[in-house]
Structures are given as structure tokens and as C-alpha cells.
Amino acid sequence: MQKAIPESSAVSTTVKFNDVFLHPLVSEKAVDMIEKENKITFIVKKDADKALVKKLFEEEFKVKVDSTNIINDMKGRKKAIIKVNKQYKASDIAMKLGII
Image 1: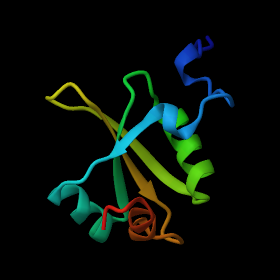
Image 2: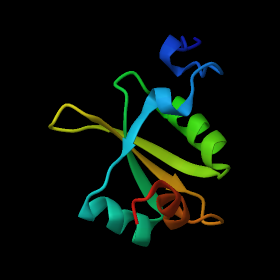
Image 3: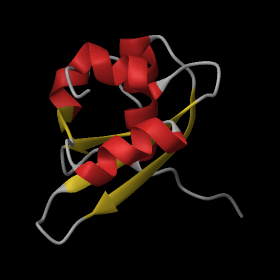
């Protein structure tokens, strides 16, 4: 039995980085994750999924992403926690964005 692939998981090439990623999360915990775990956190649109977030992040910053976690928080926002491959540094991306 084959599983049906939901339409939301289909990655579209017409979607741009700024259409999905609203802003980076700047908090003490998020900065600790950048420095210690090589992870960077963004607030994303409600309809974003893991595949789309990973593809757009890799295209925008020219890095390899190991994993992506999507969380709906208590404030009604959707957070994407992106683990950057150890060949790259999340702190370099954070400096480009002005977080650190």
C-alpha cells in the first residue's frame, strides 16, 4: 500500500526564502543553541513544512542542513530549528543576519 504524499510536502521552486521565513528568533536560549549545538531558530509561516524549510535554507545560505524540527509554540507561532552540518558554523550565519 502506497502512502499519499500531501500537497504541502511538495517543494515548489517559486517560493522564496522571505516568503516562508519571517525572522530569526533572538533569545538567550536561541543564541545558546547557535553557539553550543550549531542550530539556528527561525519563526516561519504557518503553512511551512520541514522539506520546504530545509530546501530554502540550504539555497539561501549555501550550507548543508542535517535536520529540521518544526514546533508550534504557545504564542501561536511556528518555529523552525535548523541543525547546520558540522562543516559549517551556525554562528557565521547568525553574524550575517545580525543576531550575534
